[in-house]
Length: 537
Image (cartoon, rainbow, N blue to C red; front, side, top):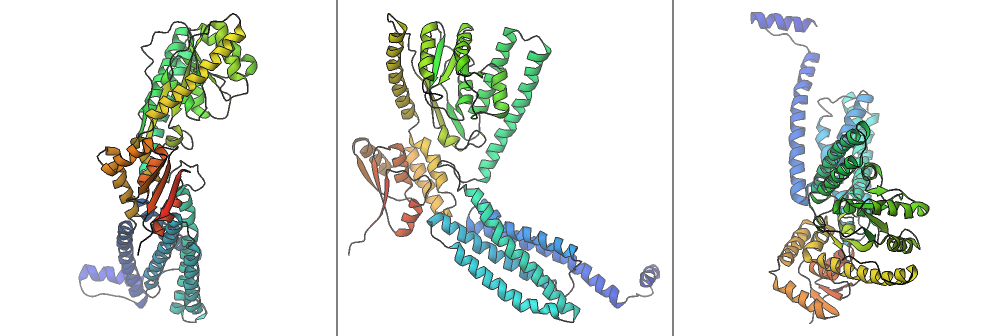
């Protein structure tokens, strides 16, 4: 401490300067540390910018940069635990370790993208190269661990520690993150994740949570604090209906077309029949009308706060087979529309129709199309797209001498109504604009050039100004097989095959690489055949 006192006295008098070898080393290390931190941040920003420009997507740039950031945190933490310090000699290795980690993470990311794009093994060869490079580095620089000179020994310690962390981060983190990014274990319509999708669904989750808190408070006030009269229950049911309709229809990137049933005059009650159950149908039914009561909602397809809202509002009634008849009777007596699911049991819909005949209820078929594309894994995550909800005409109770004959007649009418509603709803939801987002999403992370080419072709097809697409569309209306010479890595052929599943689509691509890209797509339909164009001599 004596030299610090002398320095303070010298600064006051201006007569001299006192120093020692240790103080000079400490001063140099402090200055080098400040400059090194600045250089590290600047180099990291430059490397990240080049990664973004090279991969063309922010998600891939973050994926390649993640091992470098994590390995650097591991290095600093382990150095603190082992009481290791940077000095004037080993600090030079920091830039070397950072560069090696950059190369390793880029190699692993390129291998993952190549395997995902072409479905050919490549990552194993990249990993072998990384292991060989790391082993050579460990052997070469690791021998300095037995050096007697402290500076040389510190070089070996920092090299072994830094390269170990870099190799582990590059080998473990990118494959794990990339597997969840592209959702390899998801359903056919579960597309790769993007930052934009995370932002949209995060906004939707925040809005839904806010609505849930508000509905919980309003329901507690109306049904718990105040006396739960039928008028207050009806008011709360309408509030839940409006909240669900707003949450479903106002979701960013999702368009929902609901039938307008608000102004219809009902002569008596109605029984709504849903042929197929999806995880989103419960909320779509609640958004369609505030008068429909879903009978039999005790399955695992609707859980959590959403189920509690519908149950408290009277839009969902838990009932088993023994009490379902009574639940339908109560709903019909209150002027509501009970909803039954045709796939709950072997004779559920038959008993429902007998109940409708007993109470003189007319029947309507409710059908939703597009939910498997928009909500492939449930209501928690939504892809961009459109959902169309169809509602058939009212089927009056059949006139017959006995109840059994009336049920059989109404069953035939119900089957015809299901077929008509299915056809009309599918036709309304089978446009290029409905399937184009899914086709574009299935090409994510297949290369920035491929993604731009696919986006350009799909925009032209959706706009209707592309004569090539218009010709293919007209030919698909009357032919059983259509040949498409692809201009956008098979995007127009896939769009046509999804829109016309009964038509055999033959996609002709220029080379084997493009053919492997198309064959490796998750959304590849069964009626799409991919062939490579033969070059004539």
